[in-house]
Structure formats: structure tokens, C-alpha cells
Amino acid sequence: MKITKYARKLKWVYIKSAGIVCGLMVVAFPWFNGLSSTDEGYYSVVFNGEKIGVVSSPDIAEEAYLEARLSLENENESSVYIDYDLNIYEEDKLYGKKMEKEELEDKLYDRLSASAVEVKNKAYVVDIEGFTVTLSSKEEVMELLNAAKNKYDTEGKFTSVLTDSTDSRFSYITYEFVSVDTDEKTQPTVMAAEGTQTGSVESAETSVSEDGIVGINFSEDIEIVETYVPETQINSLDEAIELVTKEKEENKIYEVVEGDTLSGIALMFDLTLDELLAMNPDFSVEKYIQIGDRINVTVPEPELSVIVEEQKTYDESYNLPVEYVYNDSQYTTYSKVLNEGSEGYRQVVADIVYENGVESSRKILSESVITQADARVVEVGTITPPTFIKPISGGTLTSGFGARWGTVHQGVDWACSTGTSIMASCGGTVIQAGWYGSYGYCVTIQHGNGIQTRYGHMSKVLVSVGDYVQQGEVIGRSGSTGNSTGPHVHFEIIVNGTKVNPLTYLN
Image (cartoon, rainbow, N blue to C red; front, side):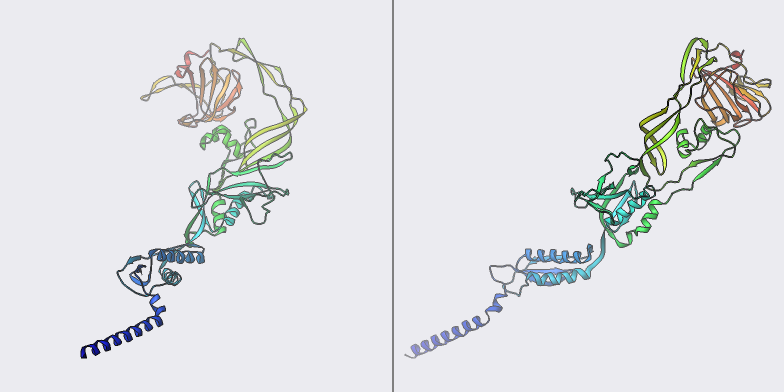
């Protein structure tokens, strides 16, 4: 009986205790809801060795990190480089307070901000065949390109536009110059320079019917790349313009002295005759240079060379090419003018290309003849004369052909006073005139049938390359230029590339 009463009492205590526990669980339910359960994981988030929170899955932690990082970069409008170590690992726990994604994102943002070691700004690298400048915006890139071309487009008829590529993570940008037009055309894929209307540009390829610039570009290859760099590596716009447009070397001027020819000056400065003439548009092969004339031998160039294509209408005098009538019964020393010819006058529309203001090519698009030209007609012989004349009158033979001073002397020398007239030993075409290494000022004449004559150490050259000279015509004055021990004439005859003894050919 006592046992039964005790059992009943124990049962009542159990029921009472269970009721209290259930009541407590109901009251504390929100707190229990924050603890882990067997249905969710327990993942600790550790930043640089410090545990900053717990989440129920690694996906929540990764999303919070990405959102925090994106917020940080958006605020800086740049690429932020951070020294950090982030670990997410699972722990074997039954319960623990867990963070919502937003709370963890705030904590990660604070720690990422504090750990930033370098901020790199969006910028644009302009690479000009290895020479680079870095600018902060596309607008500045366009201003740079426009600044380079404005020297030659003074009326601002062209402006630069940039086009973004979409084939890579970083933008690769192309440029072009387009003519400014009033037509309302839209070009949504291009970015025009500030101050122009994006809907009012037209391709430079559009044909024009009036004079003016029809195209403009740069001769160098240019790459424009979007990137991220420290602010210290970004050039100011003024600095970039100065670097790109400044001329890299001083212009050099050569003053003509006695005996100079255009071809000789070109050879002296390692230029072709065409290059020298392009630098000096006031001179030509037909125009004789005078002592004291100033000749440009180098032209300063900026990093960007501007190519301008211009349509131009002008009037000019012109001559037709000389017409030759060949007489197979006469020697090459023979020539006779059959018709003097006459100069014509015409109006020309030409397409002219300039590089940095210097003409590089000219193409005639059309011409209207006002006065017809008449060609000069010259009859010339074709037979090589069997003999050659001595190139000077008088003089003293001082060195013959053959062995001399341990070497082979490949011509003959006549000593004479400086300024003695030197004559063409035979009629032919001048193929070299000017400075020629150890020969000093020198002339070489082609006579046909593989025969040439050469006249060295002149003090003055009186003919130009391309001139046809007759036998006995004065081609220069004697001197002592080049490798010479005194005033004299060095004379050679060359047959099919081999130098022979001139004395056996002289009449």
C-alpha cells in the first residue's frame, strides 16, 4: 500500500515537471529557432584568422563575400586589391547562433575595406607601336587623338570616334576619324568627342566633289585598351598631349657649298633623292641649287604621324615627256632636236597625301587642258662609239692603270689645276652624280653595250642623274675631294662591270 501511494506521488511530480518544461519551450521558442538543428549545418566564417560569424551553409557565406566585394568596388569605381585570407569550414555542433546573409555581408565589407592594400582605377592605355600613355577616360583618349590631328585639320572638319569591342572581358577599342556633317544620322555604337553631335558624323570614306580634306588618319598602328592601374600611373591629358605631339629631334639644315648636287646631299645624309625632295618641295631635279641654299636634311617627327588626304584643284604649266627617235646608224654621241616642243597649261584636280604636312604622293583625278603641250622630240644614235676622248685638255699623267703602292689602281690620273673643265669621254646617260665615297664628288655615265665611264675627285658637279650628255660636254670641274693627294682627274672605263685600262680605249 505504501508503495502504491509513493508511485502515484512520483507520477504526479513527473507530469508537473513535464508541464513546466513544455511551458518554458513555448516561451523560449524564438531563441531555439536561432540555434542549429539537425536539418542545417554549422559553418564558421574566418577572415584573416578571426572568426566573424556562423552561417547555415557555405553558399550564404560566399554570396555575402561577393556582395561585400562588389559594394566596395562600386563605391571606388575601380578595381580594389586586398590582402586577405577567407576560410569557411563546417563544425560539429548541435546548436549555435547563426547570422543572416546581410549581417555577415556588413562584417565582411568592414574587414575588406580595412584590408585594402591598393586601389586600381579604370584607365585607357594608348599604345603607339610600343610608346604608351595612360588616360583616365575615353573622352580624354579622344581629346588626345584630336589634339594630334588638329595641327593639320585647323577647321575641325573631322573628329575622332571610339568603338568598343565585345569579344573579351576588357574592352579593346578602335578609333576612326569621321567628317562632321549636319545630316541627322545616328551612330549608337560610337562615342564622339565632346562638343560634337554624335548624330551628325559621316564616314570619311564618303566621296566629296569640292576641295578640302577628304580623309585623315595616323601612319602608326594604335591600340587602345581598357585596364586598371594605380592612379600614379595615369597621365594628365596635357602631359599626354605633350608626349605624343612633341617633335622628337631638331630639324637639321644643310647649306649648299661649291660642287654640291641634290643627289650628293641625299647620299651624304643617307637619304634617297625622292626623300630629300619631299623634305624640300621648293627644289626639283630640274632646278639647279646655288651656293648658300639651305636644304632640309631631317624633319622632326612626333610620336604620331598624321596622314592627311586632300582634294585640291589648281592650274599649272606642264610638259610632255621627251620623245626619242632612235637612229641605229649613229653613235650614241649623236643627238639632234627634231622638235623643240612647247609648254602646256592645264587645270588639275588631284588627290594629295601629306605626312606631317610634307607631301608624300599625288594622284591626278582629272585634268582640263587649257593650252595643249607639244612634246620635245630628239633623235639619238644607238651605236656605241669605238673610241673615247680624253676627259680634259692638257694635264699631266701622274698614275697609270695597274699596280700602285701595293694595290691595283683601277683608272688613270691626270694632275691639273683645280677648276679644270672635265668632259664626257663619250655620250650617254648620267647614272650617278654627287658624292661617291673615296671618289669624292664624282660622275658616272652609262654609254650602252655594258660600257660606263667614271670621273672622280671633282670640285664641282655640273650634271644630274638622268641627264643625257654628249661626247665632249662639260660635266664638272676638277678638284681634290675624297681620297686624294692633290688636284687631279681620276678616270675609269668599266666594261660589263670590269674596270679596264682607259689608255687602250682613248682616241
